[in-house]
Image (cartoon, rainbow, N blue to C red; front, side):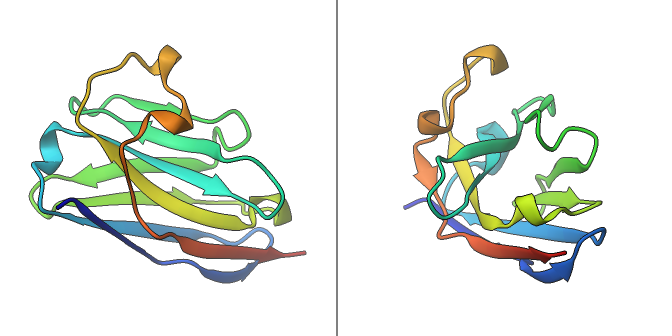
Length: 125
């Protein structure tokens, strides 16, 4: 059974940085599309970043230039570095995974088959 466990969230002041991690297990991590999706209270889920099996990346417009997604296939870990945090970045951040191949232009948050429980990021002004 696919397991995704996020960590690294917390409360930070605007302008700060966080590095989120996602520990993956029970599947061939290197073959999966991986992503970070966030959801703030009362708002729809928003795709933050994605990385495919070849290491190609995609970023959401609201975070482009401030976040970097990366993965370590040897450790089965996914990361999200977020810099220059803003109060509007406050949300629950979920790690997501899917074994299928999809072109980024067709990727939507609902595409992912597997989800972690999330790690909370709170940014104060």
